[in-house]
Image (cartoon, rainbow, N blue to C red; front, top):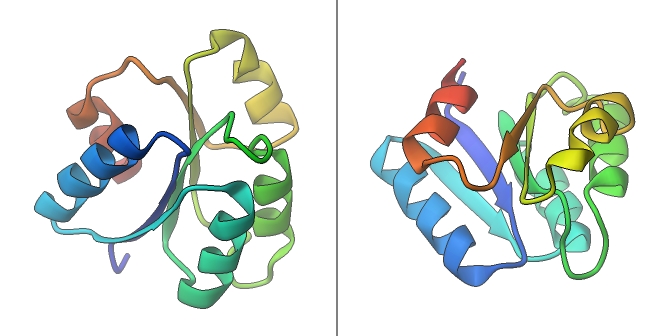
Length: 117
């Protein structure tokens, strides 16, 4: 693993904090504020892992996840979904094919630990 990660969240404060925590932990971090930018950045940088907010301003995580899972070089990359809506867990696993679903209220060290697993 090269420790590259793409983080997508429409909340700038959350995005900046996650970026800081992952950079401090040795990750190369790419960020996106929309689902459209998330997939564009994914194709450009081919990260090892994804941390995606489920509800972004322009869409939810579904189209990004489906595009990642259908991309030959990204399809096996772990996807971690963050959401303040715990009712999205089953949908994230079934439709998004997420590897991990975490409530957005989890601490940043817990999120990093989930990615490292």
